[in-house]
Image (tube, rainbow, N blue to C red):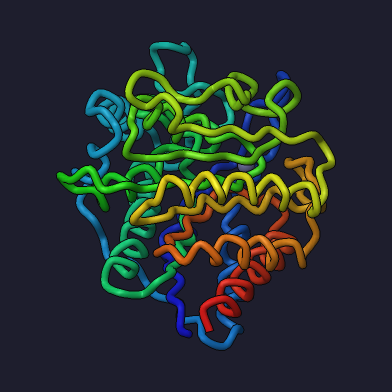
Length: 327
Ligand SMILES: [Zn+2]
């Protein structure tokens, strides 16, 4: 089959330079190469078309995020000189929960482009293609309604879920495979029984974002039972990972969504400098085939993955698994 991969050229203009980690300035790992190498590798596969997304209106952000957050971002971004980065000074007043996510003059537009990438891929699925892949950058899954962080400004996957639902209560499932817990996505849908959210991730007792991702977090109110967390130990290899994935997929199958959204982080790869799992290239093909066996309409939204070469190999094997499953 043919599969469209959506990528926005303007992500090249999103150039965070540094972050503050353990009191030291270090190089920010959200580099354009993360997506450029991946796009190049995917473009060499038979059956893949790279498509430029269309631009969506800023109002789509309000499907998930509050207007105060948008207003704060606009105020901060507009005040910046082109070569400056702004880091939060006052937590609780500034709307960022860490010091890894600087604001720059073009941050709001770059993050909106990333949302447009996800929504264009969603449209492709709604229009009849079973699977589409959004190479969204900056990533989204750490961003909550009114606060960003973890290199994320707006939650691409969550906005896609709400856009798909429109004014209905259509059932959507978000399966997050990034190494890090999807604290933003979980928070957005925590009391919502129409969006079943599942995450496999590094144990938050040891790994970012530390504040959430424990097995006991299962939703609240009407959403009780519609969040599922599967924390896994440092060094988890393919076999254990796929066993955990099968548990997640069984739960998704029981929920019976009309759309599956995969938040695909490739920082689960053994060669990733930030993640701490031990998946190898071929595992990603198996993972994709397991997911595709659900036979659901599927939107893939890219999240993390900080070794561009390993990430490109992992995502390419994932897409090969998708293509092999769909004939
Ligand atoms: Zn991650």
